[in-house]
Amino acid sequence: MRHIPTTVLLSRLAILIAGIFIVLLVPLQVFAQQQSAGARIAPVIVEDRIEPGEVFSGNITITNLEQTTREYRIVTRDISSISNGGSPIFSEPGEITGFELSQWVTPSVSKVTLEPGEEKTITFVVSVPEGASPGGHFGGIFFSADAEKQRETGAGVGYQVGTIMNFRIGGNIIEDAQIREFLTNKSLYGEPKVNFGVEVENQGNVLIRPRGPIDITDMFGKKVGTIRINDSGGAVLPNSRRTFSVVWEGEGLTFGRYEAIVALLYGEEGRKTISAATSFWVLPLRIILPIFGIVLFIILAIYFGMRLYLRRRLNDMYKNSRSLPGRNMKKVRGSRMEYGRPAAMPKIVVVAISLLVFSMIFLAILFLSFA
Image: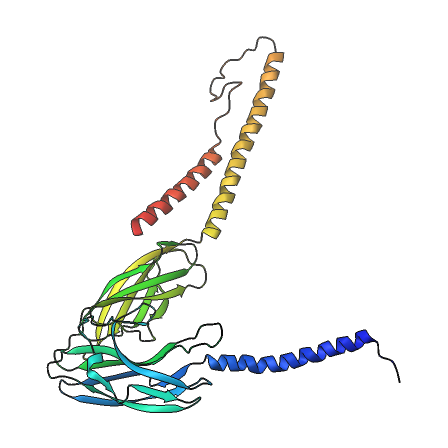
């Protein structure tokens, strides 16, 4: 029998242990991911129209995606506003928003317990009182899972999942909105990548979802681009404001002043339009500055080269004049220079510098006039 060295046996044993560890580690990682999966709920949003005094009933299905049994407490909450990112902001207990809903919602149970992978459907009713204020009312039904107590070191994780509800109560429905701001984050851009922000204020009593195009034209009136804003249907609650953002990226060489016009549609009772305009500049400084630098360098090189050349010529003429009898340093009739003095600036240099200065002044006046 061939003798196997001890070092080889140890290395093979280490490889075997590492393989077993990897095989066991993958299921543990998958199990940990499943543990933190949480729960799934459907539907995510419930919307409808209800008249005062009517009752709406619905169903919500919740599925436990964890590998442990979970107990969920069922609670109702009101929504006071929506963030710019689209997340609902919930009101504090006792806070009056003018479009409360939670007190009208009654779930069929207050708690529900689910085994791993189990799903259950609960019912709820929304009882609208006779004197309910017309317009939008917003809230939600949430399934709250408390953090589990840990036997060892560590912290448990609690979470909530829920269904957002938007009910339009019949009556005097007011759909009214205004664009408070339509701006770019800068007035001057070095490249055609412009950030637009549109702040919309909902002055009505129902939820609105403003959306529409932004048309961009250059200084010659030619349309160079169109982008859509809020195509996802982000909402603005009554008596609140929300800013929608979008980015325009132009193509090709862009230069000069541009104008952008936004036109947003909203409303369900009757389609309404609100619009606003803004302007901005695109100056490709990466191209302009090097060109100006090269032109300025050429002009300065010509200027100082001519001065150096003329100085040498004058020095030669001065030396020659001293070697001739009867000559002295007098002003030559008809000339515009004296021996020993610098020559006047050549006309070509004067013209070049004048053109450069004129171009800069023209661009500055153009920018100040149309910005």
